[in-house]
Image (tube, rainbow, N blue to C red; front, top):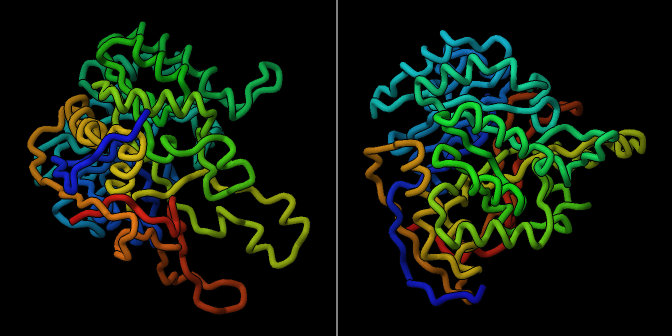
Length: 385
């Protein structure tokens, strides 16, 4: 798509990130303030903590802890982890939660993780049928089911990270058919097939698309750990389909960053093996791309690059607020365009974000939590005023 000319400034009403990870403890103290720094007024926080948030009391305590690190300009909304301990009664209890400032529901949905497919998903599900009573109760209380749309790799069915999303889509269709009034969000779609599957569903099914999946393809993460996430980025045609549905402004597709911070030693684990060839050969790379601190400027820069800047508001705000029924978010955020020859350091994405950590490392020196963001070192096309 040809790039259209763009204005020099844009005002966005109440940007919202409908899928974000902020972790726990010291990592949370580093990244939670980045939600506001990145231009968001509301963030939907995922429950795959350690241990996972399987009860209302756990989730509320977690939100209380996170809100110590942010200002009143940002509202944090929670999710529960789909787990065998989740009951009809707990769903009703979640539906009754209220944020003390806004009066909005403080726990909005339930997140489903297939077992073992991503970070902290060891307690994920193996069959949806066991949760039909929970889904029925969610439907009654207008709770949202958030689906991590992959199945585990399987040799017998030739399923790998490249086909795991396509193999999952049958579950999306069957759940929607059985619970037509249940609001469902297919999270972080990466394929043309997923886009088409959501389009074919009714008005109660929506989809999040991350900014990094609007940019990356498989070549960008193969051998490049900082771009590795789950689900993995796919092909040029898949990226084209994601960009196209955002450029169309389709009402049921919107921003969910899936921003997922990991210490650089988890993204590049061989760097901390101190010369051990065994450790280097057997280390794993954590799945996740970190975008929270630059989120709104990144979205504007990407949409501008493929001629869809006029859809920025629908992507980062309007569509999600309509689907999730978030009323009364009144804060506006203004973006300014950056000239390509500008030396404005605010437009340069930092090499990393760091925090002194209290934990001691092996040599006795004080450690640091270091998170490398997406587009590290690159210049953004837009900055927040």
